[in-house]
Length: 324
Ligand code: GLV
Image (spheres, helix red, strand yellow):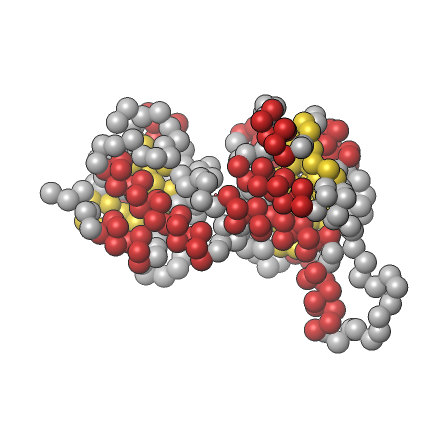
């Protein structure tokens, strides 16, 4: 008998076909919105596999409903939407999709850095709104990228890929994280700095650390106060890592110069979000990995993981220690 799986959103056809070839598939395909929790709560009861997105909150309460679940395949590199500990306790495997989205997300991180520092959105709006009357010496002037200091908080795969791009821009790169990475320091010509030094010395600060209990509000009032008034903060990781109220105040009061944000504490962020009222914020709807090629590859990778788990193989990117 084929294993049964539940897919929480319409996914690309190529990924769906991989799953359909060997599974009985049920899917939330009514609309492009997250599956209602009560439906997921019901569906999780009998299936052996769940294929989900970062929009699903797979917490202990939901997991307590699962009777046959072997694997949760998350189509994202971040998996803070899943209570991994609760899954492990029930012997449920959890997988993510690292690696294939690294370069795409690093591109977007750099795009945000550039857009915020050179005021691209503001400048484009200025032109479209008919405000452009003449070339003017100090009109829409921003901050230099070339030769500036970049501070990377969280030097994982994406952090390293951002550092490589920074090298091309002649930037001096500092990083902070849980441990020193000697290989990366040598290969990328970057230096470890404690968090305070990094914040004080950087012209750009990129937040790329995963969301964990200890990274919630990692950038708060006192961290923002250490930054230069000309500094640009970029967050392409998870919203809760930067305290949004403190960031709003720092941007509004000129304590830092601009921010580029792809992620928010609550997503989708409301159009009335205070940060969106500020001209020095470039804000995006969580599109870090959103190139056609990468999203398709993520969808297929998550499909492969699902089948590996259902076939009692160790999935390629298992994030918890579950005996298979
Ligand atoms: C996107 O944010 C991801 O974690 O893949």
